[in-house]
Amino acid sequence: MKKIIVITFLFCFVLNACVAQTKKNTTKKNKNMNENVKLELATFGAGCFWCVEAVFQRLEGVEKVESGYTGGKTERPTYRDICTGLTGHAEVCRISYDPSKITFEELLEVFWGTHDPTTVNQQGADIGTQYRSSIFYHNETQKKLAEEYKAKITKEKVFDAPIITEITACKEYYPAEQYHQNYYNQNSSQGYCSFTIAPKIEKLKKVFKNKLKKEGE
Image (cartoon, rainbow, N blue to C red; front, side, top):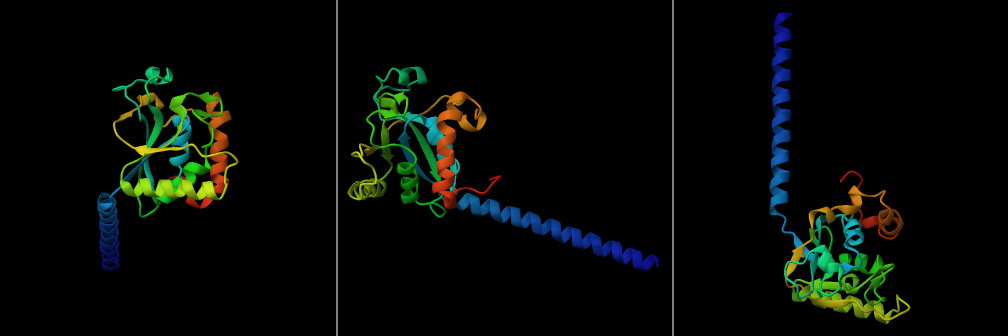
């Protein structure tokens, strides 16, 4: 009897050790795979960056979204500087994404599908040059794809008015202050978030359901 107990104990010990090692190897393998993934950048302006950030954070394949400023002449601008409308900068989001999971064309589809690209320097009640519709491309491929996509939806008359989205090279970029980062997720009950951003999220869930991250990711 004692011999059976000892054998059973040893078997369980070995089995648990094997399971633990398998989990360790799997974790290591996944870590190595993640480290080998080469992320690419996309930079979009579509009104208040709180809105843009909240939309793109929810897409499968998007690893990081950072709010910031680009497109202007002022060095190291602050949010107060931006609000004057005199810096030339736009409020933007810099998106780090895995091109094997989501393509730049898909990002463009969501970009043009979640804001109004026909209003000059305005998105809803947000008015000023900092809120202009803009794509700041990082390479010639992105430029070509953005211009082709804009031409396509213009030809198909997707919008009733002309599309005025600016397509220009991304040059000096400045991250926004920390309190602007991950804003909607941390302040969803705030007035602006409830009335302006929440409806965008609901539209995203309906129109781009197949592009969203799974719950909990």
